[in-house]
Length: 473
Image 1 (cartoon, helix red, strand yellow):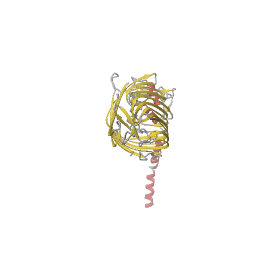
Image 2: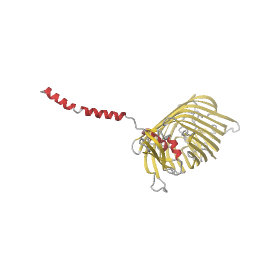
Image 3: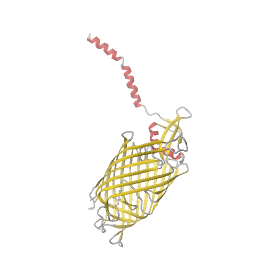
Image 4: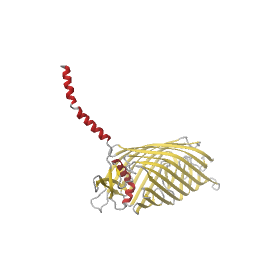
């Protein structure tokens, strides 16, 4: 009897096996099925009033008559949003003239032709640093205001002029977004200033002094960790060429040239008359060739995606130097550096309003310095091995988001604004071989910052507080 009951049980359970097998097979096919492809018959841009649609289409890298899947369309949408003249974009597929063909409609929220920017950074240093003359301070302030105007040229070009900002008092530039009809981006820019340009990069600490810039060059150009205050007239030229590759990849060639009339160089810590030098005709050349992978969903306030850049960089620095104690006896400083570098960052949305970002960077290169003055008065010339890197962790929290990109009435401006609170911690290291007695080798430091970023149709506004500790002594 027991065997008979077990047999009946097995027969009853076997009735459900075909249904279970069908469910498993259907789920496996759903997982293995490729994403559907969409044949884009035409591309239309809606929401533009001030700028030509050719810029949007060229930046999307989409071509009429080609097929794309959902992931490729999503990447194209992110590329459009990263344009400086676009605040937001949304893709919509509509039925085309035949079955299986679609019209792609790109709905955008554009920025204004007039644009503004304001940035204020207040830094607190663990060790007092040289900012003004031979004085040191534990607090520094860097303020930056920008006003500009954009004018479309042709169907895919943009001319812009700015006053103030990171490149000087007056800047003129032109960007072609579809060079050679291949979606190649070509950008040219020139800037003039009666003091010095205020710039902020991952490798130079930007300070402030009476409207003029005080910066610290990377160790490959000046291995003594000195501050350079740039005064007088200066000129800057910039050339940028971006060649798209497959998908989100591109090759970028970036070159800049700067000429500063005069300034003062002295050690960052404990400056003195003996260690301070005047300089004239400071010239800096910076050119790089890099491979870039960019899937970020925004260029200013990204919430997801990644950015990776790897390439070669060449920098040169020349200046006519003279000691404050003996200004008649001058010499020419000449530094050149070739480095390989890699940097990347990744963003994860933790919730609808919060984002976590992680960044890393590293470089390794060879430098040749000639006639670089040391703190003790010696002047050295040598060939150096240079290395360095860093890592960062950032948390962003949107405090305010108001989006209304398409108003009901065409004469009304879109309401679009957002504010994010950003908290960031960053560590860095760097060194040279051979080293100099002014520095611990390797150089180590960290920075903790907190600030607000506000963006609307007029521009971007930032305010930041930072605490900096660099173990250079």
